[in-house]
Image (tube, rainbow, N blue to C red):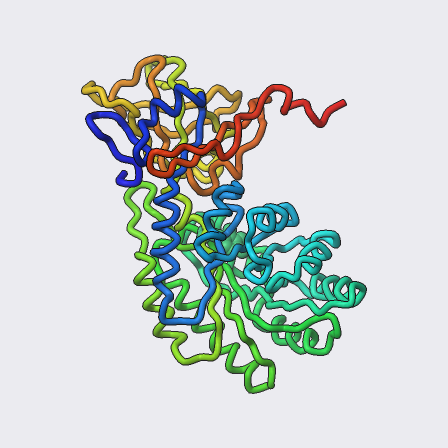
Length: 412
Ligand SMILES: *Cc1c(COP(=O)(O)O)cnc(C)c1O
């Protein structure tokens, strides 16, 4: 893993030994690399240099204020899916004209808050949502810029839980319904239809589903154009995959070139909503080995990080590379790396070859920068981990570790 590398057998996060961070801040511990976040953002964003475009980082991948501040500094916008994410984005200094709002279940107060902030646009997912936004906007004396989220019925060939653009999914409107939706939207006084949106899924390892989607959207775009409905923004969502294990996802440059070819010359601003591809490989979860235990069929490493800290293996059977923080030259054996939670699904890895770990040693769980901390919970009354951002030799505590008092703070 080149984002975090070994120097003389010690794992470093940029210029700081990870073991030093664990000694100071405890474990489990999320550690992000600021330089890597910057590099990934720029690599992604510059892939679209040939097009008028806006890169809107998907806040749900990593919502830490310090991470969002980095995105804002880099000139990025954000894609939000809740009022809470809007609050974070504004607090981090993301300009409201660079905020797009997706999600199937926007509540009244969330719509009001987004209109108050005057965000760039709402990605609308149903007719009832359209009507609700119209009513609230009129009530506030505003006009809401919207796009419809189109469900193109394309199979993204990824995990079913993160496929979102197929007929059977709850997301968006199919093209037939979208036709009526744009017509209605044009007539509603609180609504200005300005865009077309989609997001077909996550962790895509090929650009073909994106191109298939784009083809459908462009045909629909031309149809709308002929009817006098002028679309200015084309939002292709997020979804570009990363390497967790052996995957070979397309480089953003390849994605950028393909989209540039398809969209060149059209009077459209392209919006992209990358999450994982920017943040995923910028973070690790550091955990301490508590116990080793062998049964006739398995060797278990019981660590102090669990499914409440990183749920992806339990939820999607997903792979996260795991490595030593201090390298020892011990033979590898096969282990299940498990947490202390009372669920059989509480594992970080299964049947994984690891150099024999010992009690008290540290392990790094890779690719934990996206959908890691943001999906963490307090299950089993476990305080959530601290988050650090390392930038060269500088270490910033981006979120302190929760305390037992935090656990009960809202309960009388
Ligand atoms: C989750 C999500 C994204 C980001 O997806 P990634 O796979 O992390 O790039 C973008 N847009 C929408 C609407 C989403 O729900």
